[in-house]
Length: 96
Image 1 (tube, rainbow, N blue to C red):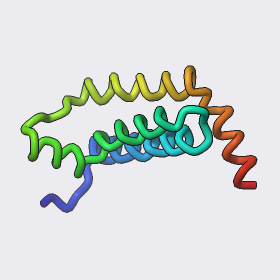
Image 2: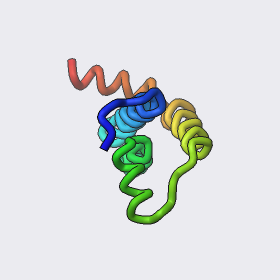
Image 3: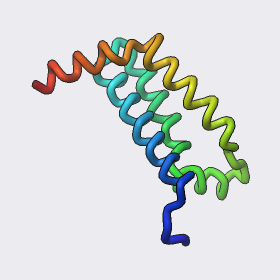
Image 4: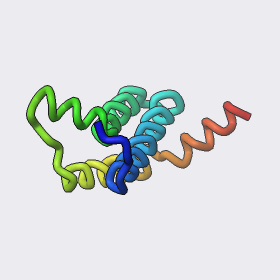
C-alpha cells in the first residue's frame, strides 16, 4: 500500500468530499431526497479507496475523462436544476 498522496489523489478526494456535501445538502434540505442520495452514491467513485475496490472486485477502472464528465453533470444538476444556493440558504437558517 502506498503511503504518499499524489496530486490526482488529492484532487479526487477533494471532489469526492465536495460532491458528497452537495448530496447531503440535497438530501436533507431539498425537495427531492432521492436526488441527494443519488449524488452521495455518485460521489463515492471519486474516493481512491472506493475506486480501487471497484477495480479489484469488478476489474473495471473508471477513466478520468468519465469522472470529469460526471463531475460536470453533478455541478450542473446541483447548481442549475437543484438550486443549490437556495438549499444552502435553508441549511444556514436551520443551523443558525
